[in-house]
Image (tube, helix red, strand yellow):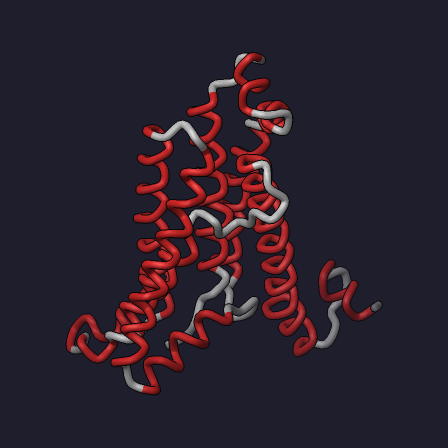
Amino acid sequence: MEEIYRSLTGITEGNSTWDYIIINYRLPKTITAILIGSGLAVSGLLMQTLFRNPLAGPYVLGLSSGASLGVALLTMGAGLFSGILGDFFFSKWAVVLAASSGSLLVMLAVLSTSHKVKDTMTLLIIGLMVASLTSAIVSVLAFFSTSEDLQLYIFWSFGSLGNLSWQEVGLLAFFWLAGIGIAIACLKNLNALLLGESYAESMGVNLKKNRLLIILATSILAGTLQHLQGLLPL
């Protein structure tokens, strides 16, 4: 413990190898685990409150399924990319871009739908439909892909708390703060929603605006955070 304290504080010069392992490997992994765990917990709470269902989770809107489809299209179709763009398409940031693009498309679809539907259960059904559709497409891609490409996709789906630099941890913390900030902003409205939409509306809660904020916060926390922590060296 004394060596760990010295490495973290830098008060005295200790073992350089231990310092490097703690500061550049162990500490980023610990912070990443805290951010991801707390972010997913808050997004799960938001979904449970919105749908008034204790079984609702952070992925019921299909955000994770959209990200999985984006990465599947990248990894299982990796043989199509070569030449100048080859280095980019086989980099870890290409995976983040593919996952974020898939989540973003699903998020935009859900946000646009939330303006047109009045029943929150309809949003839940739409999310399940998107998840089923993307899973079917991924299954078709997996059938026609090579074993190496399929292995890359499976490794990505497992996720990882490592392989993050301090710059990437900072980016992770930025999105975490954005999602948590939005969740805190609609905290009072969430308490009103626990008693039902009719009661919340009688208390002056704008249901459409509040639903939009909840979905946006969940999209940031469950979508962006999950796929930034899943950085995978291809």
